[in-house]
Length: 558
Figure (tube, one colour):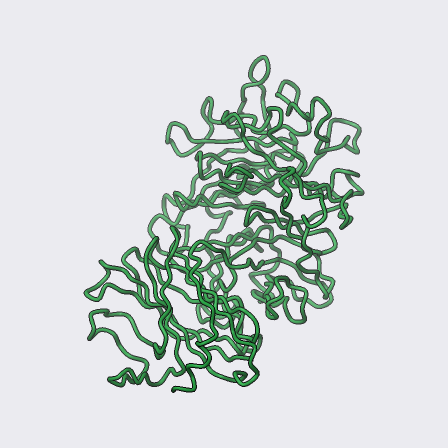
């Protein structure tokens, strides 16, 4: 054991509880000839900070059945568990979870029919397009554009919530018609009330700060906001809907964004091919709380228009900040053209999907290239050198579909993908009901930094990362045979899986997350060594010992 101390002698350790793990992406794509339609995932196997390397595009949910035609993908963490919610084949909302930790979501029990939009709305056919969740209430809002030369029954915006906690939202009272597409509704205009279209909503985002929903109305080329002010379960009453952002000017009587009106901001649409009115397709919306340059909430609006249908409007990403707090983005300076794909160095005349994270936005081009955009010089756009980082492309030439970002390690990489970092064991349950989970940014490589992550810990609490050289025995003394049931030491439901030869203190942030970087010495003698990790999470009220254990990880240095 004395020789093992050498590896720690050169480790530079620090606790960065507020740091964030590099994001991964879940993406819907596929190819007709390959018949591999489904959800794919990016994994940074070579620790390069991107997903360009061989094998870094991994099949996550390819089953050839339920996960087929997908309209939207949303990642969500719930009590330490990681889920993808998707709008999929047969107008179902599916919930996907990697329950056995093998790196995919196609095994028995891992695909759950969370909601049937047809049955919920009581109609024979629906057409759900997009969904977003309210992190405060736990509800999902889903757009349904059942529209064929006019609004059809079931169209509008629907609200789903798993009220009884049974893992699905198909029970009594778990569905409501938040916005009724076939009902008439008017909102305040410049000189009076203006009738608006409710039957062909596409994208949607939830403002969790102010408690309202914003959806893009395809027929009106408008972003409308909706809020249930009288708590009757819908947003169909007077004053519960308003003009949130008008970047196109296709509905007479509604206020136009001041900078579009003055010409300072390019119109987000173009003349309709029919010769009547305007056309626009702002079909990617994201709300990012606190992501502005001064910590403001940000509303991201992306055009997915194709060059053939709306030349010049495709590949545009707008950033909105409600500077005067009036709950709209129509005032001067509130919307900027953050990225103009067609006129960028990446040459992106069309964009298909996007996701907000880490103060920036990842945008996926019509060709499948993925860029992360961030305003590095604080000039309100991401058009300058260094603002756009190429993250990945699709070497298989798939159809490019929907996407969302998620924390690295949310879904365990299969052993065949990364045999040098494997997760094992089960977590205990904290006093808040979460399950501490261990993950990392890869595996230990000599001369590089291994970051070990904690999710699902107690907020703003202390933690200890255990690291040892065995998962069968810990010569403390006394000697512990592993795994060790911790019931006898006051922590029932928890198991010690690893030898705690070295213990590194850390602290969790307000979300119960922590990160501990370990610099692996550049010494080839360490290649092939086994390391074992597990988090000890201080939790004073959970049990007599005041602690909860995470699951564990086995790493091999290379």
